[in-house]
Length: 104
Image (cartoon, rainbow, N blue to C red):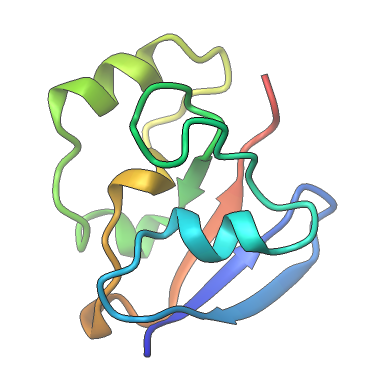
């Protein structure tokens, strides 16, 4: 079961377990004050926006064009921005560290 380290909008760091094959969005949506994930993971709202720590960016698959388009509309976008609904968790990503982006 992959471990996800997440920094919430208050700056507190938490560790969450997630099943293999789940999207990163799922444990972040289930936590108190996590991501809203309004579209439920359909890559159509960007309310699951996170910043991936630099050491993990290259370990993730590159974003697809629809994710890049959604991220391009965000004023809080950074080079390490991802939509957590588009990141599938597996054992190789255990320990991934992300920061929940500000709401827009």
